[in-house]
Image 1 (cartoon, rainbow, N blue to C red):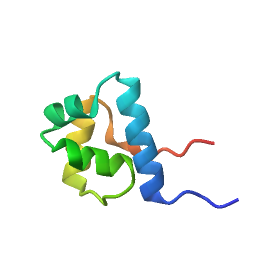
Image 2 (spheres, rainbow, N blue to C red; image 1 turned 90 degrees about the vertical axis):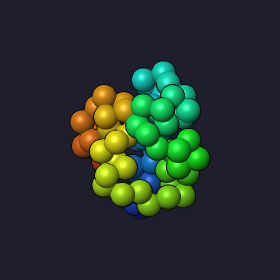
Image 3 (spheres, rainbow, N blue to C red; image 1 turned 135 degrees about the vertical axis):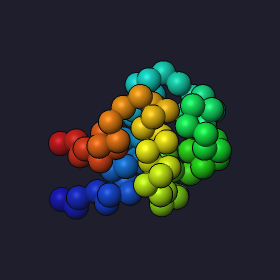
Image 4 (tube, rainbow, N blue to C red; image 1 turned 60 degrees about the vertical axis):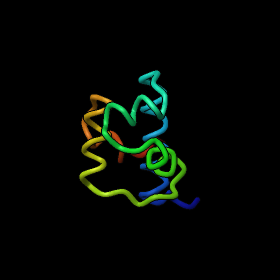
Length: 73
């Protein structure tokens, strides 16, 4: 079985965490100060985002940034 790449893990977790928070991409955009297209691209694994952007997203979701990198079984 092939393991997911770090980008796949991140993007899947980002979408799940946003949905669990019951907010739209637009709301996360507002909370994080990042453009909604940037958030959409990141959730689809189309953007390799910076550590600074990850920190902004974590603040916008009110989570510890390590949650983006946890691999589910």
